[in-house]
Length: 266
View: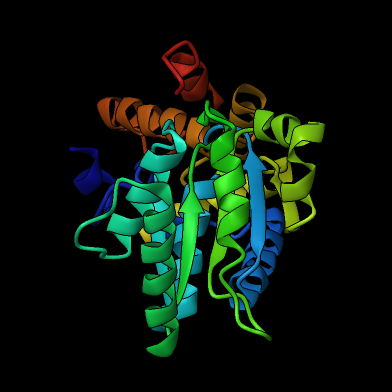
């Protein structure tokens, strides 16, 4: 396959959120630094961005950076009612038999969080695709989770991630109590055109290959077609590698990019 042809040890443009392949653009560097501060302070953060801009990968990189003193608890499907949401958190926190009644559930979660604190661990709740939340009372539960605190410290950090419509949702007057508790709002933007060549070379090297495989005109064309969104770039770059492999081409130029431009980008 093309991996051997180009000298890769693994696929350079995989869609999986592997932190080893996270290119730290200017926006990603700033977002990661801010999220690190929020996690360390056990506050609430909102991270928004277009589909495929790297929000999930960034959260995995944050987990790797912070290390064993933090326990990241992911909720990947937030289409839950408030009790289902709390029961999911309880299970993630290793509560053996999550209660049915909400007041008992909250007590179980608080006990689990406090036990983690006594062990030197800070749980960080990460809610992905939060724009999909349909029961707005879930956001009230998120806010109330921040009541788990000691005199000088919160016991639980929360990172709410979602697409741009999440920002519009949270701007509603209904969420004013939650907004007052959010210490960070950050919107992750796509790559700039001057970052795209660095992004491609970074991932080529991370996969065991060599930089410079994409010519400048190919990079420009990729930017025009993808808008700098990493997931779209990965999809087109993979297809371009396949075409180049089929042509026995050592470089990928704009003609190859144009050949794959009508293929599906997800």
